[in-house]
Amino acid sequence: MSGVVAGIGFRAATTPDEIATLLRRALAEAGLAPDDLAAIATAADRAGEPNLRAAAAVFHLIPVGLDAAALAAADPAGVTRSDRIVASRGIGSVAEAAALAGAGPRARLLLARIASAGATCALARRSE
Image 1 (cartoon, rainbow, N blue to C red):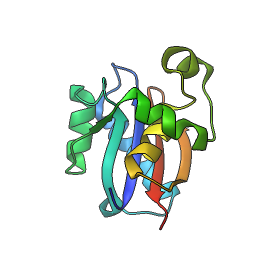
Image 2 (tube, helix red, strand yellow):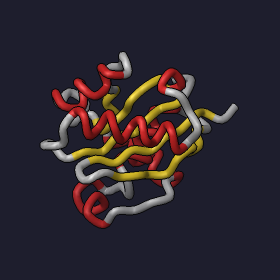
Image 3 (cartoon, helix red, strand yellow):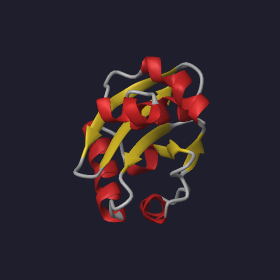
Image 4 (cartoon, helix red, strand yellow):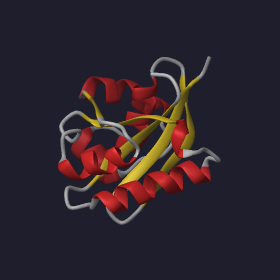
């Protein structure tokens, strides 16, 4: 994928508005516009969740699900670690791993994980 990839981690009850607001905040913190967003990525078992799909639709995108192996491969390049996520998923941050894995080989974080009450977001871009 080219462009900026937002990695999202979220709790099931997180509303689409909260996720979309966090995405906008992440883009603003990175000095990016909504049009810079090429993809929204998360763990494969969460990509079909209606609340995430509704939030992604605000940006005219469909969430991309990444399998556990892809997230684990990207995890070493992440910079934050949640003990809860390490215990449940074996990686430090779903948001960072998803952003990095979604952006592909040689990806680099543009924005480390930020959080709202029920979601996390990180941004990555492929380095050329």
